[in-house]
Length: 428
Ligand code: AMP
Ligand code: GLY
Image 1 (cartoon, rainbow, N blue to C red):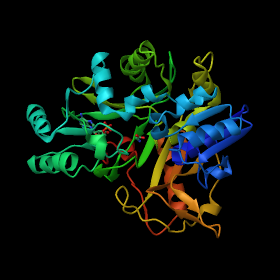
Image 2: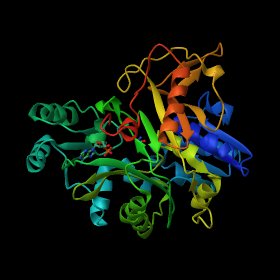
Image 3: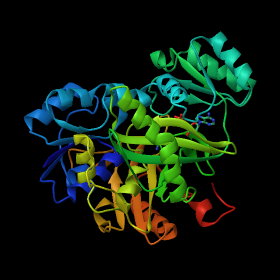
């Protein structure tokens, strides 16, 4: 089979790496890919947002299955375009992708289907937002309706922060049309966990639990990022509890989408808060989490391709997901200034002398190759140092050893990924 993976970050490197090991795969393309991905797939210069170009690529190369990494092409209808040309695709169509593409759609969907989530109101003006915040109190949670690259959630803690947030959303219009509508919701407290599963439109196959670390700074401080590290298992959610949550917050989505005539095919990712009053869904994503995908691919025993293929065909059949008993971890190496304005252009050293085992794997996230052959940092999140082991301690030790083996002047990382789990009472 010929496979096309769409995207060019660490998540897509992990997917290509895993799929390249499948006996069913004869050729893997990645668009646009990156220099790390080029070691396991043929990279083609088509942007992940160019849905017409990607569709032409899949048709002209006679691709059997397209696997979509990021959310943007899904919300732009890539899966519908591919299906219209008779191509199998792993990823939801435009309508089902609204679960991630529109916070208002997601909240109203949850309300309609009785899925537990924070109480909320949808507002379209500064004055209405102020009234809603008065009802829910501070800290308040304000969410731009549309996609905002993970930056569209504001949580002002006091009046001054609230005024600044309202100005950003409604006056400066930092999020543009994505904030034409804003969800105001109650602020929840508790442990955050992710639930990640694959759907064939009717059923789910759940991944092992994973936890990501969203804040830039150690001790969970500073601005939210796409994620500075992750590990699997999450160590905060037992597998039995995850199975219960799957029935409570993921299966109703699959059932509701099927009933609405938009079967959900692809990754369904629930971001949950475990509150004292029970679990609440914070958000749905319609694709793998990045970096959660990376440790999950390391822990996945056996072949991924039959599961993705079954989903794309609308029936898993006997295909299932199985995981190693041990653990895997990912430490994100970013460039100083991330998430706002990361430094770019530094040459990365140490890449040629890395261990190449199944236990230590370096994925590329934001790198590019210069004319002279050197690899430079070209994104906010640059590399993902991943490790696998018998337990979380071993996995993290391998990930950090790899993280220390590569360098560039602006390299930054969190040293506390998983620390609280290894040593309760410290870290986050
Ligand atoms: P979201 O994109 O909806 O997952 O929001 C991004 C982050 O904001 C989440 O990972 C949470 O840390 C935080 N968050 C979102 N909604 C709430 C809420 N209702 N209460 C508290 N924190 C929230
Ligand atoms: N790591 C969180 C996300 O991919 O949205």
